[in-house]
Image (cartoon, rainbow over all chains, first blue to last red; front, side, top):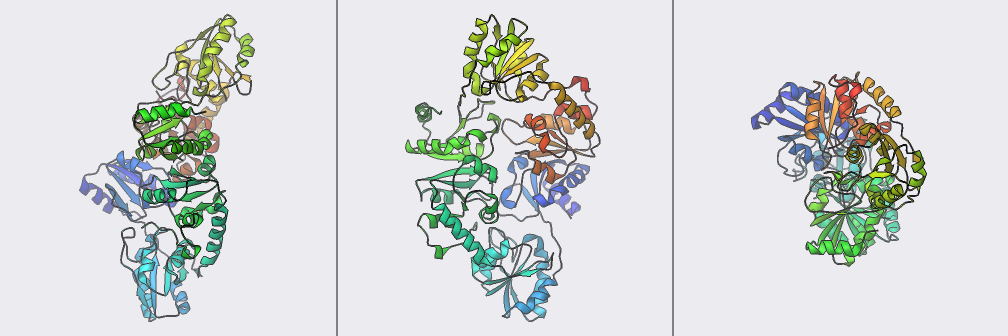
Length: 313
Length: 313
């Protein structure tokens, strides 16, 4: 729930009158009601309807039609002006941790989670401590301002923990696989919503990626995607990648969708926008969409043994 | 075909070095080759990969990463800085006009077409003249800089012709229906690609729109869409529409897609972006997407008898 009096105080303290509202897809349906509540308090409101997948995706057009952008559900990844971040904590059943404890082999474990469960970490530390296990919760970094926080594009907190075993509290296998690739540690994923515990297999992903790299070597040209989104624009990286091949062309894209890639007709793309696109969405694309490191392998500038998961630093 | 030497001259005369390229979806596949040609001439190139449906849709992000934006296939709808418009003429068989001539009842006809066939108009005028028929080709307007040109959002040239009968040279029935609604004249659509001649029936569209208006009256709230695209942003109009109902909320959107409308969950939307969205794409949307005039009817600020086709002036 949005704490409306708190938000009202924050907005009023700055003298903001016209408010742009933005939320990720799963929370967008909250916005009409929140807009109504704010209008009842005397604010003018504009809702951002564009797709939103993170704080890398700030709608500056909407902000520029308003005094401030209220961005719901994420923490800041940069210092963009006139943006207020409103958390959206999601509770769950952390007793899943008790079931994971017997699987741990050591007495020290790295502990990471995604932003919606950050508030659960102190209780998880306590559960682990009661079982005689020390939790290492890494300090914040520039893109992950909460201790122990990971993003789909930043596993800094997992790497920083420096532990042989890492407990991930959260949903899905994307983050655990990324953590495994980024750290080499054993990863145990505990889902506080479903109660499921899994140890991710990164080998399958690597085999798929290897196949895509082989296929990409046959391509006669490459579209190097650079994002126009605030927190996903890796311009220097795209320039570097373009310099690796005479057959590479730079493409600016906002939403990287199967339709847009199909319409341009390149036989292979390299993605410098959100790292998850290449990993998570490959199944939706009809041609290989490589990560930057994978394209370096294609061009002979990197060995497969030096494979690195794509992150935005 | 792009006349590369001409384009090179225009770019070089301004001292432009880094070139952003943009084309509508149907022409996007030309861009890799054009990028290669320009790179061979020493330019740096960035391709705009975002969806593009007109000159209302300029990719200013790509332009701002370059010295200039080369926009292919459309004429300007505004005076945006650092944009070069490159035509993409499409030939066809204008003998279709000879077959249409016997259908004309008078000796004077308004003549309109879309930008890709503009170069065919002088020959069409000649054909009509040979048959003793005077063509009225309206002067340019601010959004339609070619004589006799219509857009999906501007039927000015048809209205200005002031004729009882209008010949439309082009493809599809959207423009002819729009012309019929905008002028009340008899419209004969001649397709130079398929050779087909049709007289559009606007009544069917009106019946569908009437049904949508009735359905929209039951909605408990309305999302008023305002576009963040350069040439589609009708901010004052969206403010006016919001003022008509306490249950109307302003939504800023770049691409108006079924997914985005579904995610926000409004039971009805009003579109102030590209007028074609409400008319052409309604079949893709699960809820009514009204035009501005239709929402005025819903709110009791306009009679159905005063129905007006949506245009951007």
